[in-house]
Image (cartoon, rainbow, N blue to C red):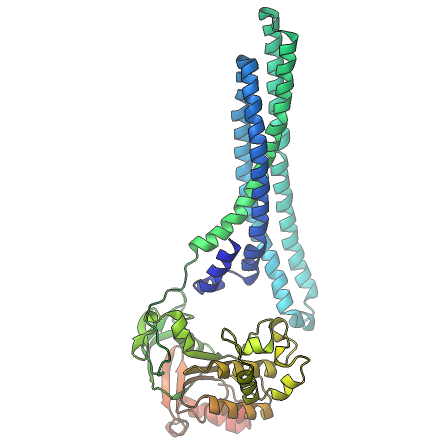
Length: 489
C-alpha cells in the first residue's frame, strides 16, 4: 500500500501539492499506513482468537441450559450499541487528531526550512507559542480519544455483571423448582464467567480497529481519489522545437484574474526568446504551461504542430531542460544529481561540470563526483547549486531549454563564465529565458515584454530601445542608476 501511495504521488495531478503540505503527505505515506496496518493486524488476531472462544463458550452454555443462555444473549445487543456509539465518537476524534498532527508537523517543517529567518528576526517565542497551541490541541484530542476508548471496557463489564446477576437469580429459582444440580449450576456460572473475558477483549478491539481504519482510509483516499496527470499517446524521439501559443488563457481559480489571457506567441526552432516583465506578469506561468505543470483553460499550445495535451508526458518532458533560480538537489551524489533520471556517464558528467565552471569545486570534494551533496545541497553556495543545475541541463541535452534567471545567484566573474557555457548550450536549441536582469536579454533573438498576462511589446533589444516603450523606459532606468547589470524589471 505504501508503494502504491508513493507511485500515486509520482504521477498525481500537480494540484495535490498545492492542496497538501509535504509534511502531511510524508506523514500519510510513512507513518499512517504503518500504524494503521499494525493496529488492524493485531486487532484481527485478537478478534479471531476471542471470537472463536466466545462462540465455543456460547455453544457450551446452550448445551448446559438454553433458557439461561437466552438471558446472556440479551446482553449482546446492548454491548453492540455501546460499541457503536463510542466507535462513532472515536472515529470523529481520530479524524480531528490527524488534522491536528498535520498542522503540528507543518509548523515543524516551516521552522526547519526558515530556520535562518526565524533566528534573524527573533521569532523563536512566537513560533514556540504557535507550536504550543497546536500541541495542546493535539493533547486534548488524545485525551478525548483515550476516554472514548477506555469507556468501552467498564461499560461492557457493567452489562456483563448485570447479565450474570440475572442468570444467578433465575438459576436459583430454577434449582428450587426443577431441581437443577449443584454441578450443573456451577458449570454454567463458571462458563459464563469465562465468557466475560473474551467479550471485554472484543470491546477493547474496537478502539484500535477504528484508529487503524481511519489511518488507512487516508491512504486509500490518496490512492483512489487523487487524479493522475492526463496525457496523450503522441511521442517523438527529439522535437524540432517549434512552439506556438494560440489565444491561451490560464486561470488558477475562478475568483482570481487569469494569469494569462488570450496570449498568442510563435517561437521558431533554434530561436532564443527572452520573457521580461514585472512579477505576476505571467512569465513563469507561460513556461510552466509548456512543461504541463499547469494546463490552459482556453486556447492551445503546440509543439512541432502537435497539441502538447496529445503528447505523452514522458516524451514531452524529455524535450525540455529547465534551469530555475530555485534549485532543488536530491540527497545523493553529485553525479546522480547531474544525471538525474538518466544513466550515469562519468566522462560526460565531468564535461558538463567543466562547462558549468565547477571542475575546481568538484576536484576539491573528498570523493569527487561521487560525493553526496546532503539535504538539498545546503552546504553548497547558491552559485554552486545553480551551476550544478546548469550542468544537469547540459547533461540532458534537450532540444528546448528554459532558463528562469539561471545566473541570479552568481557573482560577476562566475556569471560571465556560466554565460559563456549557456551560449554554447543554447546553440541549435529553442530557448526561453525568463529575465529579471537586463544583462541576460541583450543577445536574445527576440524580447517579449509581458504585463498582467498579456504581451505588450516584442522585438529585439535594438528595436525595443528605438520604440521607446516599456522596455526602453526600464533600460534607461538601469543606465541612469548605473546598475545595468542588475536592473530588475
